[in-house]
Image (cartoon, rainbow, N blue to C red):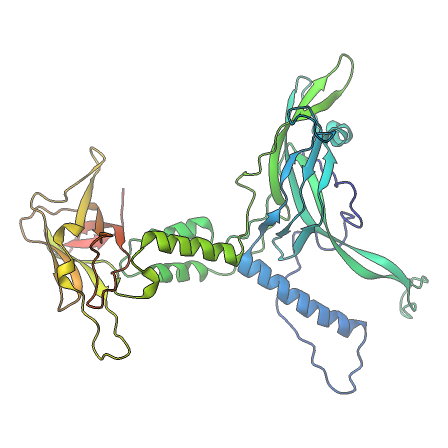
Length: 435
């Protein structure tokens, strides 16, 4: 059973109004912009529509382009008092640092200053609802935050002539706030704005379909349709345990809490564009110190053509660069490639190790006329169906380059693929990796 408590010292927060309590009906199905004209009378409806358009656009952008999660801060930790006391001293105070997050509706959750919760007081208020066994000595608790809004600043207004309320007063502001809550027993559904989902991204990254490049695989994942807004309105922050002590003839009380775990899988983090850029550039710099960003020849999509039941040709095309001052692409410096750079291995599913795929190794070569690397297995080579891995490694000290000294990208190319037997002509054919 869920037990929640609004954090103390919140002004106009957590009062249960706005659309924070109904998952999210906040993203509009369409956008209608106010069209001004000379002499147009602007009333409450027109001004509300203008505001709704701008707010809706911004929230739509946040929800669809960024997702839901913690932007910064919002770290949970034990708060030991008085200041300077040993961090190992028992405490029942939980502190959540200032921070910000986006929820599944695209709404900003801003916690402007540190918030403290007395876990002992929360437990005393909610222990009856939890229905814990008498011998319980430890209770797992989750801390989460969500968006809340409330009307504020009432002002006198003319009474609606069509209304039944005789009062001439209405709220003039909507205060956007937050609610912190503790959960025990059943944890809440956490907001997760990752799209495409992690499994679809992983499938795209590991695709073995020769006709489906990474961009095409990601296109297929996003084309599956806009996801429904998550029903999890809570941004989950951390888990911790409360130590329960029962004195003779008394009810259980919380006497200490453990250090909160802020690395739980349900805590979703949103990285800024600057952080993502730093990560990507770091990966690029580490993976190709010869100049991946400088442009140059690239490897194309892997393919296989079977010539019989035990023969065929594996092809890795090279996409050459045609410079602005040239009519023909700059050729690969064929002498910078050596056959040992390209290897093919077969997964032995009996001993579960990598082995040479055939008794007679295939012929490895670079074909400058077709701008492609090939591995050829002639008839009688013993090539058979199974799961394979091809590896093309361009060494750091003597990389494969074109005739303008631009290195082949990626410097380390590896891909899994499968071979199967064509039931029509018994030729080997390309197939997805299977087990």
